[in-house]
Structures are given as structure tokens and as C-alpha cells.
Length: 292
Image 1 (cartoon, rainbow, N blue to C red):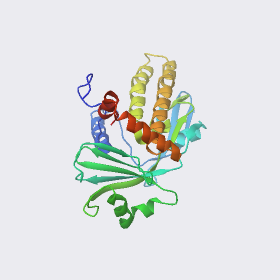
Image 2: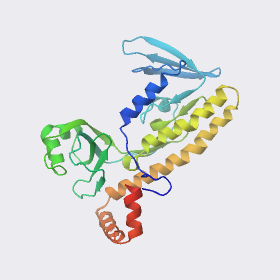
Image 3: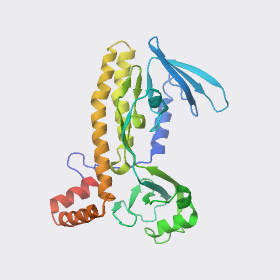
Image 4: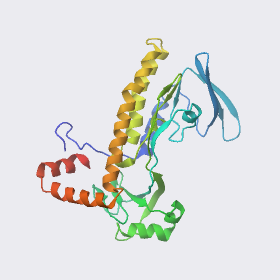
């Protein structure tokens, strides 16, 4: 528990469930129309509006016009690329495979960061009895290879007493890139979420950063669209969000380097410092209560 909140600083949730709740909440707004599985073929900015050409799975095409476009089309954002906005940063040399298991076989509320020199991994308890494991993908390994039953069993055997008796929810390989768009606003287009910034998962700030983008933008767009503020207000979106996103990227990269240091001697230093900090009660308590 923390004094200011009376609750842990860090709490997990199942993202698809949150997404479902938010989607359901949109139904109370008659002016909101959700279109799924649409491909953005092209867009243009002219005459004070944005025109988008969309393609549905059945091949039907539709033209949509809006005053503003908020591009949340992921790390590979076609909108960002079309606007030639540099995506600065680093592409991680290593990938990690994420495995979610139902009916948590460990039955503990803890998160374990295991700095195994052979294959680092993370074990995290999620709500609704879901256990998540993240294993580093080693050079030469592929997602297809690791997903084969015998290889998945071998991975889980180092963390579970009975890897054959588990229910897999999903498994997917992620690359922990750390990149940041040079600009968040390009005329009537605003980049948000992963289209504006991507970061390693270690601090759980990817989704949170996207939510902060949305909260920062929503009220500003409302004022501008309703004629209560000049569109110069939208310039403050980048001013307020970009530096913070950069700080979260740097923090996430640092945490990843602690878990899986780029050099062997870095690991030795980490282990020595961790051993010493374990004997300083205030520091140990801080990490136990706040860090994990």
C-alpha cells in the first residue's frame, strides 16, 4: 500500500476487456460511428478539412470528411509515413514472446523479473486468474519455432511444475522498439498512441501513454471544433506530450537494460548492486511496494 493512494501504485488489467467497455460506452453517443476492418487507402488535407478514402473487406469504398484526423494506426502508421514524419529512435535487436495462461498455475499475486543469463523472463499475475510469461527470443529463433508445442513446453518447464496441464490463451512475439515521432501535429492531422511513440513494455507505459494522448487531445479538439478556441491550442498537444513520452521511453529502455543487460559485465554489476540494496530496508521496501 502507498500513503497517498492507499493502494498499490501498479495495477494490471486485461486490455481487451477495457477496450470492450470503452466500445460499449461509445454507444451512448449518437454522433459516433465505429467502422471496423477498414483500410485507409489515401487521405488529403485541403480547404480546412481532411478527406479519407476507406476500403471495406468486401471491396466497398467510402469517402469520409472531417475537420481533424487523429491517427492512432499503430507503430507502423501509414498516416505518419505518408506525411514523411521521421520516427526517431532504436529498433531492438531482441524480441520477446508473450504467453498468457488461464487459471494461473502459480496462484500468486506477484510479478517476478528473472534476470536469467541464459534466457531472461518475466512472470506476472494479471486479473481474472491470468498468468503472463515473457521470454526473450534468442538469435536464430522464430515465432513459429517457439510456438510449436514441444518448444513451448520446454519454455514453460523452467517456470511451471507441470507445463503440459495449462490452458494457453495466446502467444505472440513482440519487438521492444523505442521510437518517437518528430512531430505530433501536421496541419490537421494529429498523431497519437503508438503512431506517435512506441516503447518497451517494462514499465507498462505504452497503453498508458496513448490514454494520456487521448485525454490531452479530447478537450482541446472539442474547444477548437466548437469555435471556443483557436487551433493554436492544438500546438500545446506536442509541447505537453512529446517530452513526457520521451521520458517514458527512456525509463522503459533503462528497465529493459537492467533485466537483460547488453553486456555480460553489466549483468555482474547489476547483480552486485541488487545484492547490496537488499540489505537497505527503506530501499528494499520502496521496490517491493512501488516498483513491482
